[in-house]
Length: 361
Ligand code: ADP
Ligand code: GN1
Ligand code: MG
View (tube, rainbow, N blue to C red):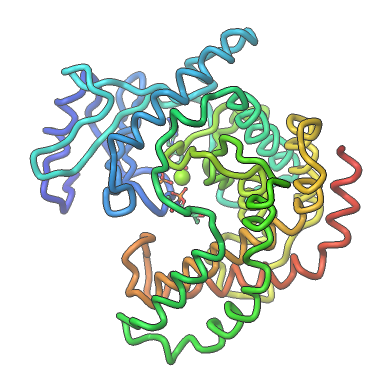
């Protein structure tokens, strides 16, 4: 297979002890993922250094976090080679490979007999996703946060994301601003919700915890036969954050009726059955240790994280699509409209969501 890049994939593979016959794999928006069809299989990834400016910091975080989780899994009698990511070192023993042209690559073992979903086919999948992310955060509750590098500053600081949108509007690098006025109006109107989580964190009502920060449904691998969660992946953004980021972001993606880029906004709604399933799984793992304010903000976190992701897509559209991978014209705009439609529906359902949360505490 040919890759239109300034490197040869065979050369990259030869830097690791394993892997041949690669094909492009996965639906992530950030890194390039390749599956090495050997036996056993491996995952090769090109780290997006436009997004992650400090790959050393990213890989050091992943190395330390997976080692910590490994110990927890062993203590619990689980299978550490299946239940957490395993880094395959380079021939030189490094945790990633930096090509002379600056491109960075890492390899992981492939977790067999698993599947990841872009849309949950059954609400139970959300329960297992909630379990996966709740357990992930619980296993990291005694991880020394000061050991973690902040891989992307202000990643879920929603007011900063609003400021970034305003900056994109001022610069209007793509010249598209005039064509997205409806979306911008929505974004500015709903910015009233932006400070709710950060303000509670500043007051100390919402504590800083070690969080995943990218809790998309497709960042969990599920057992192909039983639906049970096996492994949380995509650990690039594990950083100190709020439990509300992980809860809200997971629902933004997982409790939607549609894929994140569905263009028929009539079809997009927030599925309360999926919300309930996720809450059950997540709060079953973490409910006991949440503060009063965290609990109060759980429903709103889904709205805020959906809004935040929407304005990030919109800002990227206005900036000329420099951050998220796109696969068609106006892809980021479609995604932004999708997230805004979902945010509107979540807003209507907040009281019902609060009732559901109460059931699982
Ligand atoms: P991105 O940062 O671009 O989202 P991910 O790390 O999430 O990249 O990987 C993209 C996809 O590749 C995942 O959604 C999953 O389907 C698959 N994948 C990644 N790592 C593994 C693994 N170790 N075993 C099996 N599948 C994997
Ligand atoms: C990106 O890498 P991926 O596809 O799992 C993004 C998330 C967004 C998400 C939207 C590092 O996640 O923050 O919520 O797209 N990751 C980064 O789908 O920006
Ligand atoms: Mg991913």
